[in-house]
Image 1 (tube, helix red, strand yellow):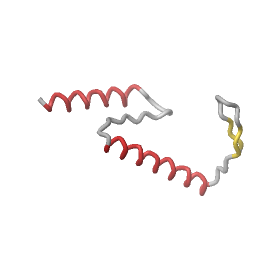
Image 2 (tube, one colour):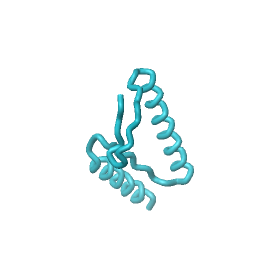
Image 3 (cartoon, rainbow, N blue to C red):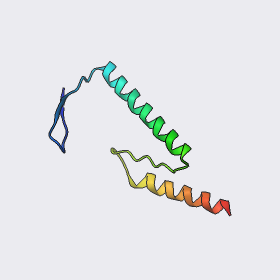
Image 4 (cartoon, rainbow, N blue to C red):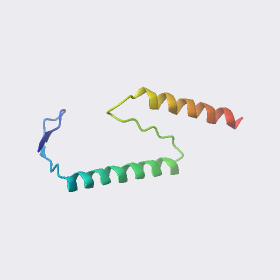
Length: 74
């Protein structure tokens, strides 16, 4: 399968087989874990917003949770 970057027009051949998709999924999971750990160590809040769904809900939930956390501090 050939996929094209919508911004650059660059085309790349992509192996869409189960093994390739599993490796890609594992790479994304590892990158997510590293990002979460980096933010945790830096004591930085992280909001993960997917590109395939509602972007408002995670933001509203994040700020509501943050507000409650700050209110509980005193």
